[in-house]
Length: 143
Image 1 (cartoon, one colour):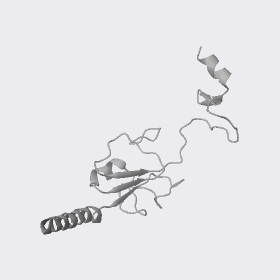
Image 2 (cartoon, rainbow, N blue to C red):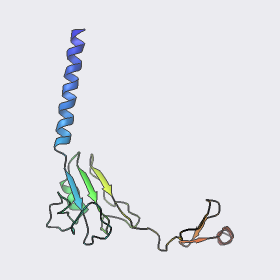
Image 3 (cartoon, rainbow, N blue to C red):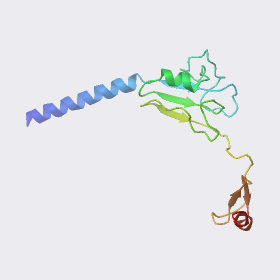
Image 4 (cartoon, one colour):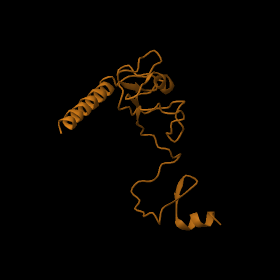
């Protein structure tokens, strides 16, 4: 019985040691483009000369930051246009293993604004050529 108690204590302390070493070295990285409109994570323009280690000194390159991150780090990508992001907001480069990425965007991915204040159910609301249309017009276009 004493063996199990010592064994479980050993496992407990080893787990705390490993978790502690993983989280204590974790860093937060910040990325912003050259526009501050809609930004929530950063307070300055991104620059290749910035470290990216604070909201006041964000980098402007996802690729550069991804080359510096390590397991346990978090990358905050603020609203903006980046060569590594597709138009729909999908990252075009792989996320490094064990790294968390927080991506914020207020960008609408539609070319046209969808009208507000129109009450519609899923059965009544159709999109054709990036515009809302009636069911009849939608079905006619499918023939």
